[in-house]
Length: 128
Image (cartoon, rainbow, N blue to C red; front, side):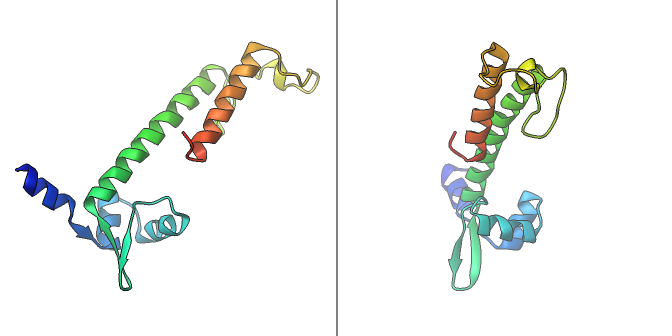
């Protein structure tokens, strides 16, 4: 396929049904993602919602990147034996999180968990 033909294919417009089928999600999920502002870029032609194939591909790449970043943070948290963003708790809970410890968070493990927590929050907010 030539570059020009590929460019034309990327400009293919898809309906919500076609886009949902291509992504493997329901049209309801796609509609909610549109309302939340976290789905693929779309536009309207009158009352019809349309997606460009190129925009959907870009959105998929961004999802892959964000998922990879979160996976790295999850792995770091699991290695430290902490509760992760997904709610997984493994290993011992460090003393900095126990009721009888000081709240200063002086130990290295606590500081590392604070950094991971901040990074996970930035990822969740879409700032990283």
